Amino acid sequence: MIHAIRLVGTALAMVAIGLMLSTGSAWAQGTVRAQGQDVTPGPGVPAVPGGPPLGLRDFREDMRKFIQAISTYARQQKPGFLIVTQNGLDLLMKPEADDETRRAPARTYMMSIDGLLVDGLFYGVPEVGKPVPEERRQSMLAMVEEARRARLPVLAMDYARDNAVVSDAYKQLAAKDLVPFVATGAGLELNRIPGSGITPWGVNPKSVISMAGVRNFIYLRDSSGFGRQDEFAFKMHDTNYDLVIVDTFHGRQALSKQAVETLRYKKLGAKRLVLAYVNIGSAASYRYYWQAGWAPGSPSWIKDPFAGDPDRYHVEFWDPAWQAIVFGNAQSYINGVIDLGFDGAVLDDLDVFRFFTGEEPSAQSLP
Image 1 (cartoon, rainbow, N blue to C red):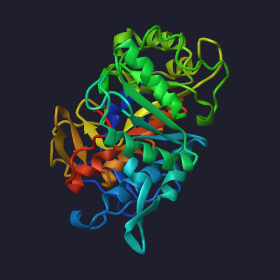
Image 2: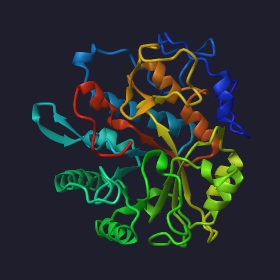
Image 3: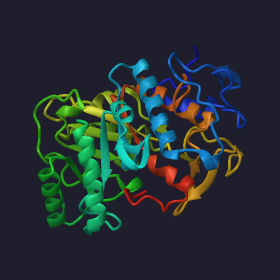
Image 4: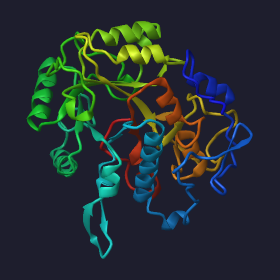
């Protein structure tokens, strides 16, 4: 089998040349078109049908099934592969079958993930460093408690720059028994190690081999400002965070397996977890899979761009062609993440379902 995502050196960058998903492709009898050939999803990967018309779809359930399928497939490829969802708290509960006015835990969905990451419980949404609205906080905390009842670890990320606010954010998050990180910026501005980067909140000298052992974490979406990727890896190695979340790309080049392995060790020498950022709800024209000629409506599953981010587009995330980019075959994003040696993935843009329901954009996270 030819692996278009071979993670030695430039790894995923090879896919930028090799991946040629047909714009009109769909899973027929469990197959997809990639590089001009039929690619059959791996064992146990469901061939997701087109489903009902838009007006009859349950978009929240579509997203749950998407994540469940990613989880099943990833663990078939790498047992123990971790799936952490970023926001999407609405997915934790679903209407009861006999009374849609009542909601109950979505247990099958919750059992398919290994943890949650929530944005802005105390500070930073909608403005970095400012307290969040009380209504938002209480609503999110209620859903966080549902996750905790399901014994799901919860990572919590606030946004602040002032030292006094940063300190207060850490104290409030820790008081709720959440795993805290306070970033100085959101989205692609997640690009620096706060402070010295050497003494994170709650330094843990022990090796961390599961989400249950994580006491603190750092999240970096853009590592390009650290110089070469080996410089970035060594800079991160000089910290003691229990969990590191990074993009699979360092600038235009994919991280190497060696870089990921370097990220795996704290300065103290103990091991930690390294998760990859994977966006499953939007497509970006600067990502490796983007093809010349793609635009809203071509292929049909690409929709309008995000407000304030014209190079990122909503996608019909239930479409088999988009899902085949994310998981299910040797050329998929998840396979690339696994081959690089990551311990798991953080799945983002789950709230894209609101675009299709006509709801206001989610206030759960910053872009």
